[in-house]
Image (cartoon, rainbow, N blue to C red; front, side, top):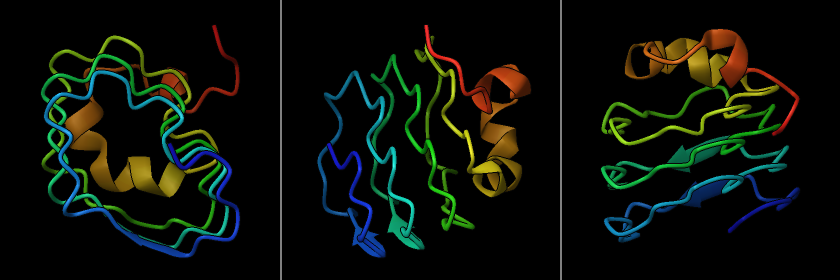
Length: 108
């Protein structure tokens, strides 16, 4: 969706309707300068693939993923590669997944 938006610094996606989305892979991948991201209304109950979602978002120090439902997610590899601060702040929502896999740079 926003893959490789290298010059974007702030995004407010609070009005996005994501209730039917099944694949959020690479959604913000490569958004290297992104510092502020509002995902407060993201409905992730049907998402199955979150792989590389925040891949290389190295400027994003925090994003609140408290509302994320990961019950149906089975692909998570690299979601937080080079974005470890996001993982550290939201680990309780992702602790069912392998931490090393979420930070991995490899892709299947």
